Length: 134
Length: 243
Image 1 (cartoon, chains in turn cyan, brown):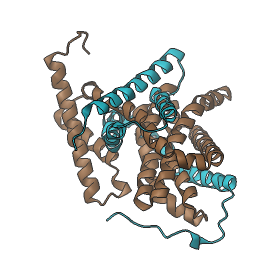
Image 2 (cartoon, one colour):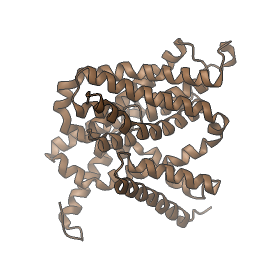
Image 3 (cartoon, rainbow over the protein chains, first blue to last red):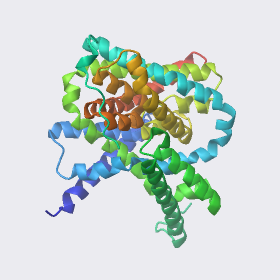
């Protein structure tokens, strides 16, 4: 089983073209939306139109997504430039994160329950969580 | 800064140093994460950033020089964001099974995440840069950085607040949801992905595949919806004389 590199390359080029198209749209229309999000929507639309994920695309996207943490490092390290802000404003930052995250969790879960009419009649319908790690 | 078309030897050296430092930091972070049994507290991004800061300090390299050299890696962050369309497409069946409830939940969740964060940070007197960096904190890191940047916030600060948000959501999310009576995997998954993005989704996949799938769906859709509503919310806050 040899892996044909051509579909992978073409898929990679297709993804890059979606990225460039997204950035161009955002720049041209001067809208404050991240270019890659437009690129994501473009690729998603293309996949729906095509009706399946083309051969070789998962092999391109899987390593990109698996190692996404690596890709955050250059931008994230820029926090070096903002150490004074963190020093001066750590209290509002911590308070906002600590208070609004639980709020968002509960509001989202409650909305889905309301819309789907999920009834929490008995807990035994839910299997206990299975821990795959370890 | 280079104006010539072809990269010079000096440019290549800068890139080699930056990419080497980044890969080394990532390797260290993954090792710590694995040794620590993938505890959410040992988030690889957070550790990798700390190691990179340490390495740059030790080598006396400025952040500007480092970022210049690491541009290729930064570009691929945008590529990976576009690639999120593929797992989203794989969740198409789950999405179709409950299109309206999921859409409404994600919309309400995105609005509540952004509005609560905007209102509280303004009320606590945070500076504009901090307010805008906190606003997208429930979206996945590359999108949050993009939102912060396009609104005039600080992408790097938003990266850190996003990661901390994800860690808190991943640790406290399920216990909180269970205590509040949410025992359905779909409810838990949507809430985790909405509030705690990729870190919450990674945690969800450790527990159950359905939980992870719904969480991933909420993460992708939440990022799209938040991108769309963030400029409008910030405009409203400014019109109200708050921003």
